[in-house]
Image (cartoon, rainbow, N blue to C red; front, side):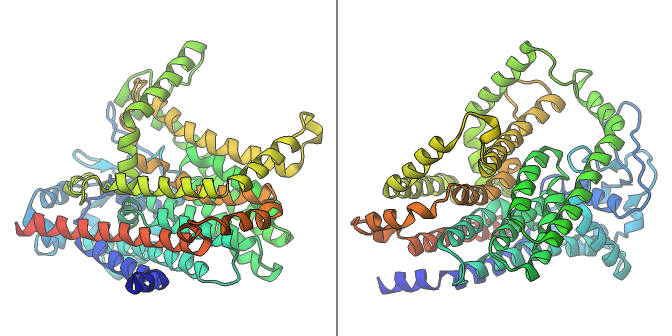
Length: 512
């Protein structure tokens, strides 16, 4: 019992050790270009490092790009186990950037194609790092691994910052609980895997977590320190706008943060960075729209890119939304928890059904929390329902913010399905939607719940509720600090599952 208590007491230290190990092993052992569409993301990073950008698509193809690349040697390496184990000893290890990337199209070259999915804000940091790394060395693999390791370091630093806030005695319990849930989500095996790759989603995930941290810090910082965190928050939201489907949630969170900020300069810096990213995304959508439409028509036919115009089309979309949830929900749960790319590692997941136990345990914790704090939650809910006035002109501004923020979450969620329905084909089951597309919303969900309780003036009911919880016989299991420790402990287990997967993948693939 004492051993368990010691583990729980020092769980944050163990978590830091484990994530350092995850960063190192993930960067070294995962084979080249094994993350989803990583070759195309690498091409897009190269494209964003160029000052002059002009889209080109060969006739009757989907090969859209700014620049193009020759994948032949990389594909040969991926097909060769010995090359995957040590690519430096093969031709791909000697490949120079000038022999891989090309400004003009010719036969057998590939464009990024990821044009409509990402406006480029999410590649801003990587493209500038790429400019720096290629001045040091022109070797393709050097630049590839340097960029991948940089993404892994960003993931590690954000986790360090979140843990630091967990052990900060000045933070309230609600804020600590929010940080712990963000840590739990941001350290899921899928997030860890993508965060150590060149995927464009890696910085979108990082921005979601970092924005949540900045928002919570800005709630109580003095005016001298808010400018820095407000600037970082603005940059994070501008990065998230790179995927246009997330624009509604960035607007909702942006308005919420502006409402919280008291310092005029902080508001100015936040708005400046956010609006700059937002304008770039809108510009990119307009700039690329004609070529993107041509690409999707070549891929899916003339019905692609046409918006819904009448009730019958809207009805079919709603039906598709329902059937997709019915058929894909279990798959999304597994993909959110732990699916590692498109290669053999994606099918390993040790143990195969561990994600079920993870979700059941989280569901069990939520049920107990809701039961123990039912009076507290019902008081808040009833009070808030009564406070809503049907007269629009008398609605309180904080009530409007809550409704707007809730609506932006819902609009973003439905927007993910709408985009796939419009661009990828009007199927009754949208089989191409993957669980990782929802991860930024899931990372931001703890912040949304934290802000909701703030808007509901939860502190009025806290003391009364706390007395009732302390009288409960099972309160030790779910009391405030122990609950936070449990969440970090589960995050440790998730990281151990991730390490077991990449080690198992490596040894099973190359030594058995």
